Length: 278
Image (cartoon, rainbow, N blue to C red; front, side, top):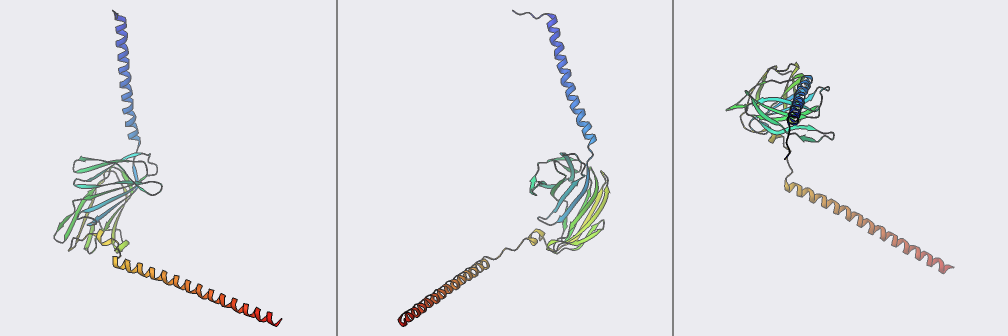
C-alpha cells in the first residue's frame, strides 16, 4: 500500500492553489481587456436615414433605418437601438455584400424600460433595420403618430423622411420639414434634417393627417400585370407576323428559282440556234 507523506501532500495542495490563482488571473485579465476595449471603441454614425411610411404594407407604421458608421469605426461592432415597446421586427436586419446582395443578420431583442432593445453585430459600415410600429393610431379618418427618438450614439447627419400615403390630406409633421419632394409613383415625401446629434438626445416626432379609406400604399404601387387575353392576343400577333415573314421568304425563293430556270431555258435555246447556223 502506497503512503503519501506530509511533504507530498503539501506540494500537491500548493500546486492546486497555484493553478487556481492562474485561472483566476486569466479570467480577470480577459474581463479587464474587454472593459478596456469597450472604453476605447467610440461608435459614431456618419449618417442615419429613418424612413416613416404610414399605412404602407399594413395598417401600422413601417419604419426603416439606413445607417452608415464613421469610417474609423473598428469592425466587427455590436450595435444597439431602442425601439418602441410594441414594435414588431420584420426579421430585417441586413447588410450588403460586395456584389450588392442583402444578407440577413441574427439579432437579439430585450426590454429596457419603455423601450424594446434590438442588438446585432455587423462587419461592414452600412446596415438596414426594418420594423412595424403599432403606436400608429386611427380615429375615423384622422391619423396620429407620436414618438421620441433616442440613440446611444453620436450622429453627424440624421435624416427623417416621411412618406405621404396615397389619397391622404392635410399631411403635417412636427418639427416642420426642411425639404419636400416627389419620388417614384408620384408619392410625396417630407424630410427633416438634423446635424450633430448627441448620444441620448431625445428627438420628439409628431405626425397627423386625414384619409377616408384603409387603402395601402403598397397595393397602389404594385405593377399591373397584363391580362391573360391581352397576352394571348399579343402572342397570336407575333405568330402571324412570323408566318407572314416566312411566306414572303418562300414566295421570293420560288420567284427567284422560276426566273433562274427561265433564263437557263432561254440560254439553251440560243445555243441551239447558234449551233444550227454553224
